[in-house]
Image (cartoon, rainbow, N blue to C red):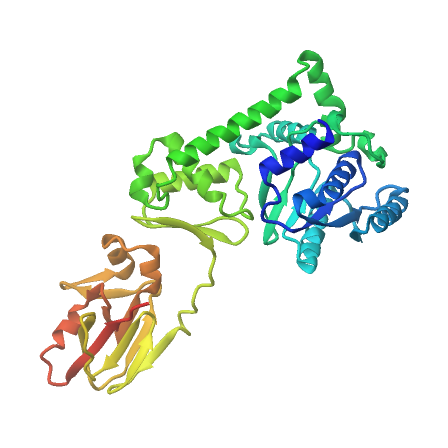
Length: 425
């Protein structure tokens, strides 16, 4: 592809339509130096201002010299360059994390709204093959995304459809470590793919085509299910099993820091298909919360200290607790006001439920836990339920149940009324 064809493709894809100041990650290799050459040459046509970032991984003797030369090149071009050096025990994963954290910091400091990297079609094919080799799910065989959100802006890879052999000759550095087969990607690049290309000279293109087909399949499924509320259990149960799998995978994609193994995914799917009310801890501080009508994955919140989260209400006083306003003997007005009979001579304790809670209903002692199950209350409703207690006996659970003890106080001359008003939150 000639240089003007690069420009035409960049303009057609409108990569930089919403970006004026962009950060280019430059390693010094042929791919990133090619992209530097192109973006610098066509800054005016693309209406962008270029900033460069380089990470010295310090894994080769020549790394410092290359960093110095890149700084000199940037100075000659009149382009700002920011550099950083990796320290500590190196691995591909640590190096990548270090790079992108550094890029995000530079973007913020320099007011850049896009990070541009020089990943190309060969990188894409290698990534797809690597994920296939590792047993990744089908949805991940689409490979690297062309444009994605990053650091409050976008990460753009404009060369993903260009093979390395099509790059114009530009000054660049040769990374001798790319010829070593210590890392999986290098083995894929130097050993596995060349061997497979002997069987099928178009194998790289076949990988790219497969990735594109998978992407189209994902897009089609997303299009036909876009109106579905997956968290609605009635909607979820109406779908055939393969659609349930897709919908759950799509929902989980909202949580990039939550990576479930296949076994963990199947466990979550089984819970959604078979369980009623359920609370299931996941990974990295997440939990699955499911009730009869909905489910959600959320960050685990600290459970209230039940002994601490209680309050004493004296007669002729009014307080707010949980989702309610409680008035001991002082009438409250409103449609959402409930009245519970209590004894006037003893304070009322308001608290959240505890293990072993029991109340008297229809002449029988019933566990609060069992009552919640029978009433099909959601986990959220159970957690927010307030227990009204007097003399260490449960008199009521607002909007859920009133015990026989409270009903017995209705006509007692020593009794009064506890007014309970649901707050509009």
